[in-house]
Length: 153
Image 1 (cartoon, rainbow, N blue to C red):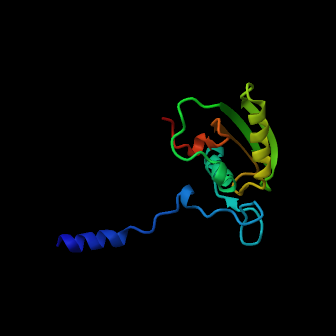
Image 2: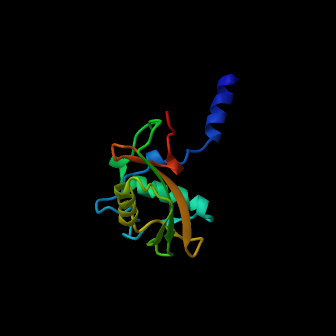
Image 3: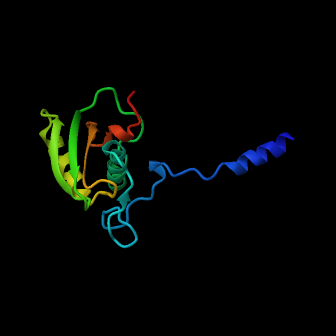
C-alpha cells in the first residue's frame, strides 16, 4: 500500500518551474531575446514582481560577473538604483537612491551594465515600470543583486 501511495503522490506533482539558476544563457549577441529576436516579455503586474524578471535578465547577460556563493562580510560597495523601463523594454532613466560615492568607478560600471542589458523584458501588464534593486559589489568586481542574493557570510 505504501508503494502505491508513493507512486500516486509522485504522479500528482507536475514538473517544477525552472529557477533563475536553471535559466538558459542569452543567445549570442548579448540580449535575452525571444524566438523572433524581440525582447522577451514580463507578466509581472507590479514593480516588485518585475524586479525579479529584471534581475534574472541582468544575471543572464552577466553570468561570468556574478559572485557565486555567499558574499564576504565586508563589501567594497553597495548601491541602490532605481531604473525606469519603458513599454519597449528600454532604459528610460536611472536614479541613484544611494550611490557608493567612495567608488565612482562602481557607479559608472553599474550604469553601463544596466544600459547594456537593454532591452529588458517588456512589461506587458504595465505601460512602463520603475523598479529598485540593491547592487552588492565585491572588491573583485563581481556582484550580486539583492533580489537574487545568496546572502553574506
